Image 1: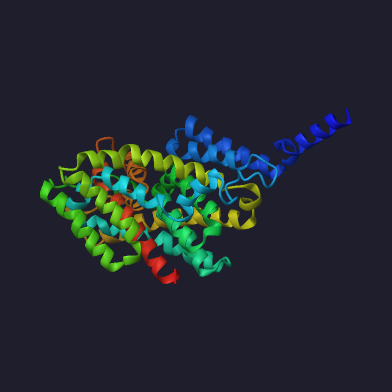
Image 2: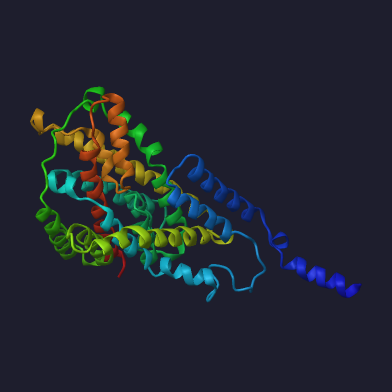
Length: 381
């Protein structure tokens, strides 16, 4: 009987119940909230559902030394997490994004690229705020990239500059990407007048197939020469687009923009979620990162909208730009462009802004990768 009791006591020590703390329960509740938002609200379900379930996986309490945790060298989760820590997953996602993205809107209206550049001020604004909040320069750079609204870029840069903050930065970036409609709409309405929201823009010109093929080649050479440190992201983005537009590599483009990006997105979401172990994730620094991430989104949206408003002061009436597309400079493709469209149609049901908003939106993807390269070049030494 005594042996049975000892065996049961030993079994109890290895259960999650015996090793559970309130922090584990709090993180599991957060994971359930993420899953609920993804399924019920349909807020970026391809991101929130894997991340939410990953949070639950990462916070099931276990007895130390079982070699199953994501931070235990050699465990299955740890091996999968190397794709995040070593920066393997983000370039593969950028390859898929390039294979799915149509740059026609940007090619036909290159002036709108400036809006995508203006929105990157959210990155550098958050960087300065993070410095002021007591973070080291490399940590501040990793936190600032949240303002680019680009989860893979945030993971890539934080893996190079501040690996210890990667979990909080990645979850923050993906969370706010899912909340783009909630965050951006009030800012857009606050900063624009009814008259401005009614501005109609001319139809973009048609883009030839030759232009579409030339763009990724020239675009990559120009951006890579400016910021060589952004090579992994920029190279994969433009290469994926060339696969799409060349017309002779459709199978590769379909694979990159379909099965491959789905697999990598699943792995990156699950492992990023699992990296939020309560003993590592729950801290005052994580809360500060979430706050700074929100501020970076607000700054990026505000700068994009205000830039268009100021620009309009120097444009002829027929050339004016609807400032509602200023929010699309953040690189949450195509969600921020959809917000431009929906807010514009609320003001004028016949005014379609999506085709115009896609230009700064895809410019924002390029801009966030360039900004990451700049920060990595200055802070990664």
